Image: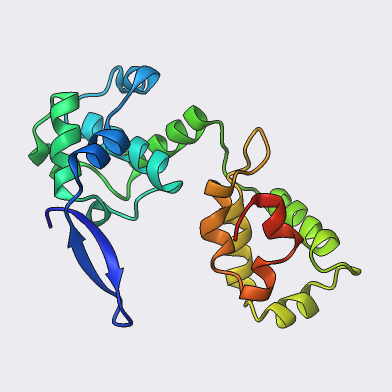
Length: 194
């Protein structure tokens, strides 16, 4: 697994892609005050946090686990933070450590977790600005053909609520999950999705 992985064809198989040097340096090099975020962290925790921080910066979400981070990237970041790449095997991908790291990364980028109140607020905005009629959540969900769990998931992806307006980069992955007629609605225009 020496490169970035992309889904290939209908089979959904992952295919390794080697990153070129410009892409590796441009996307995966810690810069400025990102390095300050590593203060007090050592070993696997330092390397894991650095990778989670840069993954979030590049993809706008957290990695699901080690498998989403190419070995090439691990080696590059490990060199930068002076931690052997093998230390990443000791990083907790589903424990308290990564939960704390996610909170630190959100705080660093000015985001917070989406609450139920945030999801309700987003649903109200969608109903008022997209549906162009009185909010009828069950009817709207049927029209959009989106199950309740998926709708909530998409709304929570729209937030981490930023301190500013949502950017196209942060909302585009969510928008692409919506049916095409919905993506071309006033919501997609408002957030810049195509």
